[in-house]
Image (cartoon, rainbow, N blue to C red):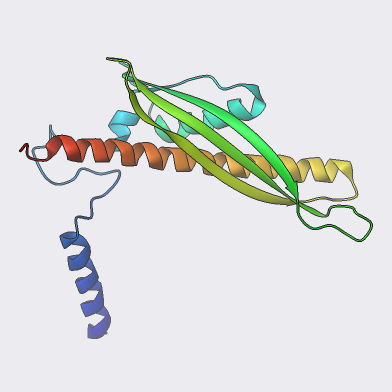
Length: 179
């Protein structure tokens, strides 16, 4: 029992000394007014409209993730996103009928500062979700829709993580001592 406690204590000390910093919590350095909370910054992001039903679903998921308590009155950033989708058949029977497919969703995003129009962050996130191809077209369409939704939810979570990382990195750079 004490051996486990020692390992847990050692792991905690190692992460504290290696520069580990919580992503969605204050850094612990500086005064409370100087600390950056990712969710406070997220509230200042306007999520632009995205084409098609998939775009609406993705945008709604982003609103849930970035604005859980509502968007701020003063918006400082615009998030523009473009979605792309591709399908690939995987398992093929001898009769050349596919039985499994992968659906790959890609989101290309740009975060722009409203104050000076500079690009704060840009990049691409990608998610692949598999589904079965059935003899019934309805079953196949339902499986494909479910795979698409899983991929879009994963994309939204990846994008939130990327944005948080970008803001935390920017906050750390602004708090570092000037040379």
